[in-house]
Length: 192
Image (cartoon, rainbow, N blue to C red; front, top):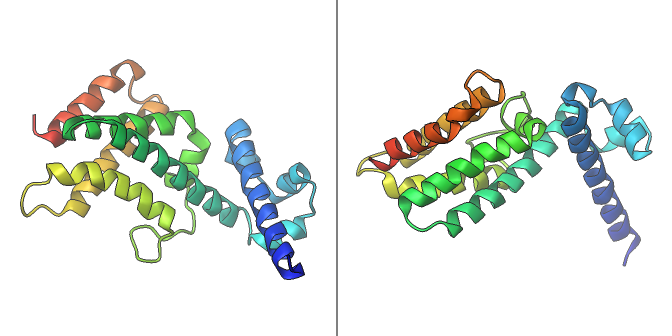
């Protein structure tokens, strides 16, 4: 292994360590607790080392968001492929999406609530973002009527899931009605 290859591997490992530490700290104490000073102490590197990888907290949060989208895409893919039938796939993905938001609140916030410097819905968007969106699109496509814009329909389904997840998490909608709301959403999208 060349010295250059080893350095690149070590750099990638440090970067992953920073991202993982940020995720863990945010999940334990919230994003306000994630500072470059605190992260440097957590991973036992100096702040300049962090800045050699990321411009600041926003860039770290963006890296966390990309990894979170990859995690979400994998969970949605698993739910989608395990379900049988159009309605069941739609329901499985809806439950998985809102469950992810409840189980991983700080990660979900980095992905979809906090302002991060990531291009969404553009060709420049990282592949993980497209993969997560595609998992939603794949369950919406079969219910699209002729002439429907599948992308817009998928965005609408996503927006509904995000709204439900966010409103339940914040206590603005009571948790006991969550499953029924998902059933209504899926029924509306699936046509009955």
